Length: 178
Ligand SMILES: [Zn+2]
Image (cartoon, rainbow, N blue to C red; front, side, top):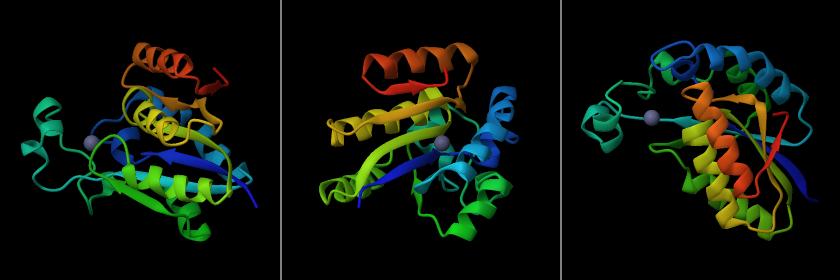
């Protein structure tokens, strides 16, 4: 039977309260937690995951702020979501860059088996990892309905958040609750 999927992108401490936290991310925290709790379907999580060599990577050279180093508190999902994830045994896709090929392949296999009704994405940051994964999923599954709930996403800045929502709308991602 086809199921609805909710993909929660990188709602980790470093993107909410710690190294790269923003007021905007903190402002959508409650929405995101409620969305996950109320969702009827399967919830998947991604975690931005870097190693001690982060500053030597291309991302680190362009954004020299260490974040989401595996095993640190900042790398963990925010507490409410980690509790949910553990309780429900949800899949977590660790990724060392913006988009997750592993996530896309996982969903495409299920999609080809007729097991995916729709995919919705929420999380951080709208203009980096949310848009990257939304467009990646669109490329893998052009006939699948893919949506992003804007009320559970935050960008690096409010302007970049809005610009990324525009880009996703242009690319036929359904933007909800804008
Ligand atoms: Zn990163």
